[in-house]
Image 1 (tube, rainbow, N blue to C red):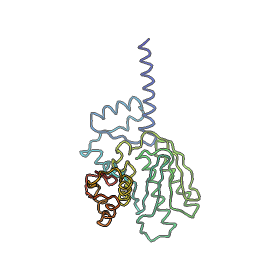
Image 2: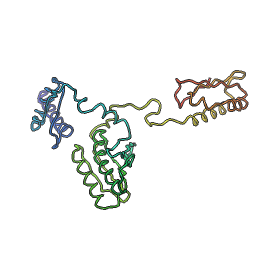
Image 3: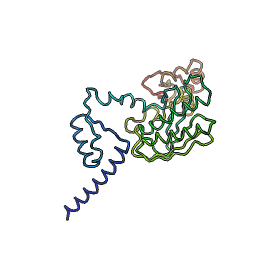
Image 4: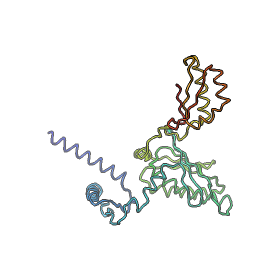
Length: 287
C-alpha cells in the first residue's frame, strides 16, 4: 500500500515536472538547445528525452572552444540588466522603472540624429523599442502590468504597424501575454504572466546604502538633519565638553566656520566636525 502511494506521488511529480518543463524551457519556436559541459549535456538530453521527446533532436553539445557565455555575450547582457537605460540602434533609448504595482517603460529619442521628420523619427524609434521592450521583458522576466510610453505618432497606420510589431515580438515569449492597442496618449498596456522571480531579484541584492531605491539624501539634507538633531537634543549633551560630529566629507564641507560659530553659540558648546569616509552619506554620528 505504501509502495503504491509512493509510485502515485512519483507519477504526479513527474507530470508536474513535465508541464513545468514544457512551459518554461521550450515552446513551438524553440529550434535549438545548446548545453555545456558534456556531463550536463547527458543529464539534460535524458531529461528532455523523457519529458519532451519531440524536442530531443534540438539538444546539442557546445563543441566550440569558447564557452556559451562568451559566444553569446551573456556576461555583457547580465551587466546591462542591472541598468534602467537600454540604447536602441538608431540612438533612441528605453528607460525601465519597476515599482510594487507595475513596471513603466519610457521610450525617447535619446541621441537620434537622422535628418527625418518627427513622424518618421517616431516610427523608427518606436519600432526598435517594441523589439527591445519585448526582449527585455523576457530577459528580466518582468511580470504583471507593464505600461509602455511610446513616442507619439499621428498616423493611424503607423500606430497599427507598431501594434502588429509588438504582437509579433511577443509571439517569441513563453509567458502568456495580453496587449492593448496604443491609446490616445501613446500608451501601450501589457499584462505578462509571472513565471518566476524577476531576474534582478536572482542576480542582485538591494544596495546597503540606499536600500535599493538608487537614491541618497543630498548632503544639504543631511546637513540640515544634523543641525536639527543638535538643537533638539541640546539639553542632553554634557556641559563643558565639546560635541564631536562625524559625517561624510560631502556633508562636512557644508559646515563652514560661520555655521559652526552660530551653532556653538546656540548650543553653548564647542563643536568639532570630523570628516570620515567610513560613514555613509546619509548617516552621521554625534559624541
